[in-house]
Image 1: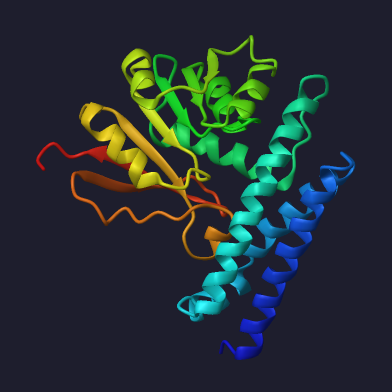
Image 2: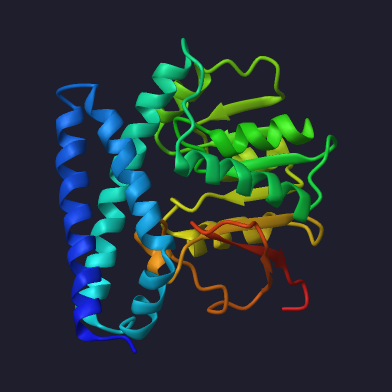
Length: 264
């Protein structure tokens, strides 16, 4: 039986994680050495949201306003911290081998399974929306499949960082460009919307008029306790799409395959 004590234990863990992560991210602006601590704390958030006991407790208190507020608060802090950490990792990766963390390993493994689930191959053209400064997923897709991959991001600094990475052996490029222009010029067969893209339905609404029935859109998201580390997504709130869950094998986020429904 789930008790109030367990609820407050979960809340206190979320509050402590958020406060520590916020402080460490600020400290990292003064000293790069703090990024190691940011990395460890982000891995701790991953452990917190994937722990089966915490999942059970959240299910019981999912509609509690206090829990919901704290989930949203830690999400904003986690995303801010992750974006800062990715820029640091991208700068380091220019001259040093990648340092894989719990989070990065999970991201890498999930990207492998996604490519298999939707049959991305050498002739595919993959548009990755929200690729970030350290675009591990986009690079993993390009490495595993030899597909042509284009990563786009609204953060011009993140795009500049990703362009400095050693990707000459891959068919991959990065831009900060208008989505419609990119669609028309790049002509993707597959589109991936990153879990850190907040307004996923807005992106889908922009995409829909330009999509054919054969183009596939993969939406990464996290609902429930997973939304402490990802922006949530409800695939059932709009007509005009066929939605199918994709087994990506990730405990950190989920994936929904969205295909244009021309019948509507």
